[in-house]
Length: 168
Image (cartoon, rainbow, N blue to C red):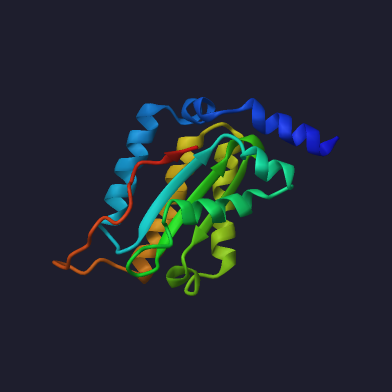
């Protein structure tokens, strides 16, 4: 019964629900926030909001974490010059948040720090304040990237990935 309930819950939502959760204006503001962030460090931040998992994931009982790792690859967050990309993943159907950091940053930041960021986002998401929660996450990830991979004054700092949140 739990499996069937989970499938129904995920199939009930679609990409329009992801857009409704944030709205076009919020997506634009998030994109500008990521763009401003990336001028301060050499990392790349991607935000991915997914309404529900694909049926194949649900059928085999995959977790939100598994999907986030897959999206990390699909969105090419792993493919940055300094291996310091970060994916902030939100799964609406389960109110799950995952942060996946590439090896360049992950080896410098303990898991407890990522868990604290997720915990900070959770309250805003439970209250339906998705933009606020994502803003807080982008700001927290920005602080880590500035600390470990600051942009050097006058050095080239190309934008390697799109700044616009990915809705799935």
